[in-house]
Image (cartoon, rainbow, N blue to C red; front, top):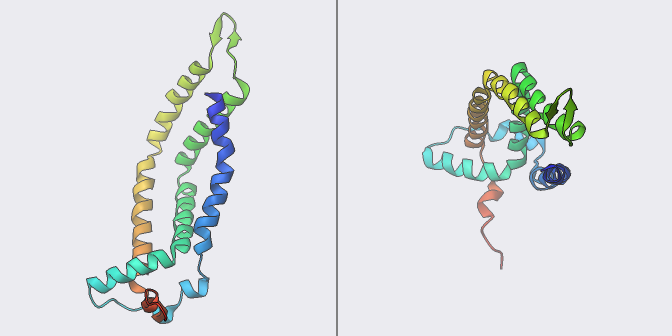
Length: 168
């Protein structure tokens, strides 16, 4: 189990690098993202759907940054959730680092499995009290309102109408 955790920990930086290359390569300039000249109300639901379809692809990097910032804000404004997550993650790391072998404490032998059981018996009620589902639903709702609102009210540029046209 320890080798699986180490393998996972070794893959995390590579995953972040790939995510940065893929998602953030689509980052548009802030002037283009906040261009107030292109904001208008869509005429009907069909036009709003077309705008949302185009803009979510065009501004995907910017929307990913918005969701990331909302996630950080949500975690920082929920100290109980931050403490519970820190306790669980820190406990997991501490058990893997400092107690890979069974410990002899007096007459008792404490195994890694027993330490994990204790960690989860304390950490999961802490996490439940911190209500992570409230943060998840808030994050989903606020992200949807911001992203879909921006995508629906921002007109695509004229050049977007010619993206499927081939020149001869």
